[in-house]
Image (tube, rainbow, N blue to C red):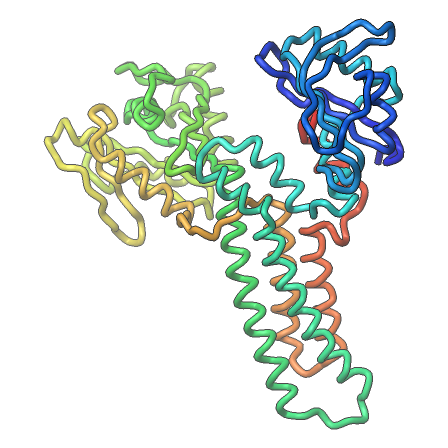
Length: 446
């Protein structure tokens, strides 16, 4: 981890030209910057319109400077923010002047990392800063903001507090083994564990929703040649991203397209049609199709309505990975003058539609979200895969605690492990390596 004693500086606005550019500095005793950089001292938390001077006293730029003394700043240190013109050259000159005055270039995410280390944010809130910046839909923005405001953290800390109360009860039983266990205490311990497991399960469900909202899902379009996979991709994306032709085997390589359904990001993969072929290039495309199936979170298995519904070649079904959810899409109903609909057969869902006319596409979108177990819950907060894994680990510990029953030593140990797992989410038990990995993915000026 970089030294926290250094002063750091970075351009906080995106590269390129713009109306306004921001240079941010954080560290100790930044008040000494003011006379050299502005020719005057700055009043705390007041916007001052001033020139920015170079070492010879010439003005580099003119703009607004704001000084935030510690601890009332984003990082918890002295922070100086310079808002000037957004030209690439002028911002670099201002940044170089700050470096000449004793700052060093900030590493990616170092401003937010310092906010975390100075207890201005916990780890979940720090991660949600990056999630808010990267949010690509209104739903993602609201969920990231909910995490940034501390809702996710408060939920986790509430679970930890209840774990601690339960641990205190169990540890008391271990400290006084000569005392006979009160039936009421045993019942109280059991009830507390049951309620805790239920609330943890609910939190895990919300975290999985948040993880889907952040990461998205990969969905592979699979089927024989000429069933309309490329047409369906174009219809879902709203643009002609894939070449459509009556010639079988037109799609030779996987085509990836990002779409958005009700705020949920999805990555659709149009694949080469599965069939026996001697064409070497097409064989390579089919091999990539099989790879896409293995990596997909869900599969849309396309069929031609003219060949009859609920029919899929056994050779294609045999190649389908086990355990990956799928939908059967019966395309080209327009050629049979049928209406779009959803049917269930043997537990499998079949959607009848026309990728050419768009009839039934909304039904497909709804079924995709259901397949991904998406629910537009108002309480969803942005979550990452590590959060989901930590919640799963805590849930497994509580499950084992329930299994050991009255064996207090084992019960107490499982509770301790569950608390440690939850503590990793908010950063109470995080290693330096984990922190470095998290913050290295941030913007330079954040």
